Length: 94
Image (cartoon, rainbow, N blue to C red; front, side, top):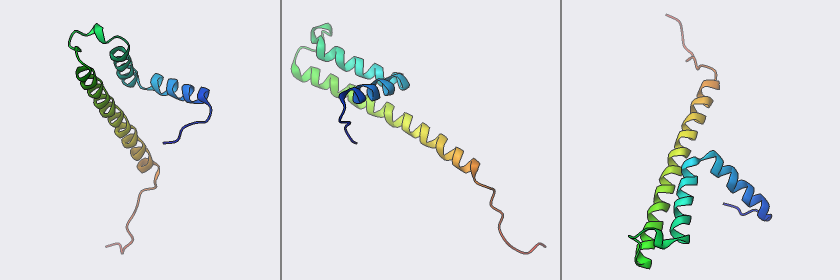
């Protein structure tokens, strides 16, 4: 993972990824809500509770990203297979 030197490029890249992955956007917004307004959720009485909530969202985000990656990879592999010519084994005709 490389970090861009230009902050604007980083922001553009993040926005593009969020637009492309609505589930990812939802997860980030959920983490922002936890961080910006911990009193919003009555379950978050302690720092440990907030930490657990953020970790849960991070795990959910990771699962979503891996599911999307798996789907893209599967589609890419299928496309590669369809583009290859059909293999015909060499041998004598009977």
